[in-house]
Image (cartoon, rainbow, N blue to C red; front, side):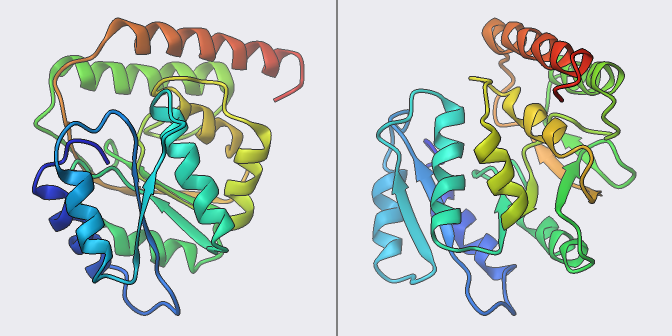
Length: 229
């Protein structure tokens, strides 16, 4: 979470509303120094009266990947059996969450949200973002023998064992390609894709993430050719 404004608290509450029926639920709200507004203070205030919320201050974070990794590691340290990753600010819709639980109950190792499945949606987004997401998916499936309809989405759920495998293996990407890297490591596991609605947080797409994606894709392709992936 970063710079979510008043939506930070509303988003947390909306997610928790979808997470009934479990022995224990923990919402890890991860913030780092990219935060410039009052959303961190607002979430800390909510934490005082909401026992299921843990606000995480990732002071060590140097990029978006570090913040996600901090959340992964805290969830594993807490002993969570299933870990759901979801973007804040309603970029991802909380009402899509229950289908992840339904699939995990079938014995899957992981579940991945897809904007390109039937009933999936890509809203309030520029054509550039759509092309990059779809093109990146097609290229990754071609080069790395993955088989998903959306290799760049960040709405996903893992069993404890699966996420521990990802963390132990290590994530080399320093930008948004890390979502594709994770899916590549999970390509031979038991997984299902479910349709999600995505609302782009920003129309901007910088050059560095695109360049870094090609570099990381080439690295993974070389590992595959060497039989190490």
